[in-house]
Length: 116
Length: 112
Image 1: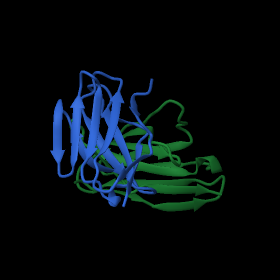
Image 2 (image 1 turned 45 degrees about the vertical axis):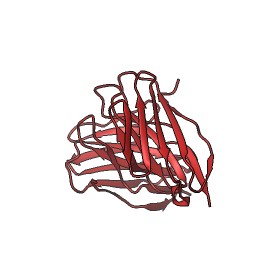
Image 3 (image 1 turned 30 degrees about the vertical axis):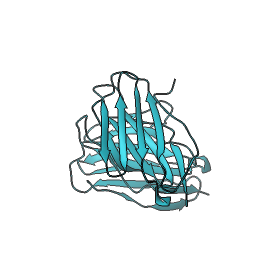
Image 4 (image 1 turned 90 degrees about the horizontal axis):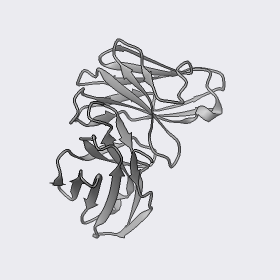
C-alpha cells in the first residue's frame, strides 16, 4: 500500500506557541489530503480537506485561522497549530487518498501534540 | 443522526471465536465502505474495503455489505489476542465526495 509519512510523531510545546506538522505522500501524488483530530477514546474527527494549490476546506466548527493548512505541492501538506492552548492537545492524523471514489485512504503515523 | 454508527463495545470474545462488528450509515448515496483497525496510540490501518453488495473475504476477515439496509459488517474468524484493537467503519460520504466519514469505533478484546 501507499506510504504516508507524518512528522513529528510527538511534540510538546508551551502554551501560546505554534507547532507545524508535516504530512508527505511518498509514492503517489496526493491532490487531496485530509487532517483529522482524535481525542482519547473518541473517533477521528475530520478537521479539514487540503487541496493542492488552493485553500483548504474546513469542517464546521474548526477555526481556519488557528489551524493553518498549506498544500504547496502534490506530496506535502502541513498543518500549523497557532497559539496553541492545552485544549489543543490531541492526536493529529493526516491521510492521503487518490482522487477516485473506490480507493482507500492511507494514514500517516499521527502526531501526539501536548501543550503545556 | 450520525452519518456512521457503530456499537462502541467493548466486545469481548474468547480466542478462536468469531467477532462480529456492525456498522450502519445514513447516506444512501455512499458507495465505498472501509474497515480500519486502530491500536491504542497508533493511526488507523486498512483491513478491508467493499464496494458491492454481498460478502468479501480476505483471510480471517469477511466484510458484508447490504446497501438496501445501509449496513456493513466485519467478521473476524479465529480471533487472536493480536486482533484486540478498535475497529473503525468508514464510509465515503455521498456519491461525489472524497471525504470519509468514520464511526466512533468498536473496541474488541480477544481473551486468551
